[in-house]
Length: 151
Image (cartoon, rainbow, N blue to C red):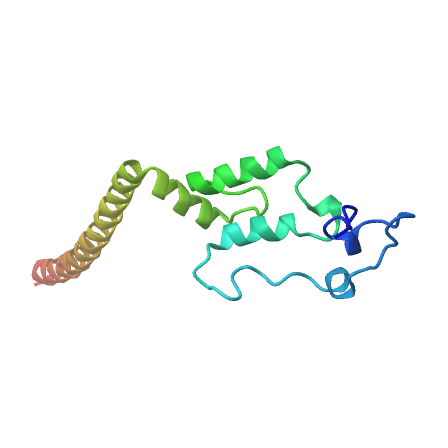
């Protein structure tokens, strides 16, 4: 057995006199399979972090292991990751998971305000109907008074 064997992943290393480069054509031409393809239960954000690590273009990967670690920490804490900008709805959902008491109170307050608005709209409609009836009664009373005065 030789003590000088090729380093791992030689086919993807740049050419050197000792180990001529042999490009791994499937690896260099196709993107890796997403981690969620065999197992749909894998979290979407974790898949995005993995795919960013596997990007072919170095400029699209994490600039350092520290950036990767920070993104993994954000994912573990339930905060939005840097690899993908979260939509406002996703950010709100993540905030609600991190702050359930405040989110519950906010939701209860919103529900109370919405209920009050609906009740006020119903009361306003009832008052409008009563106002229309009073206007009709006033016009009828005015007509009756005017005809009584003319006789």
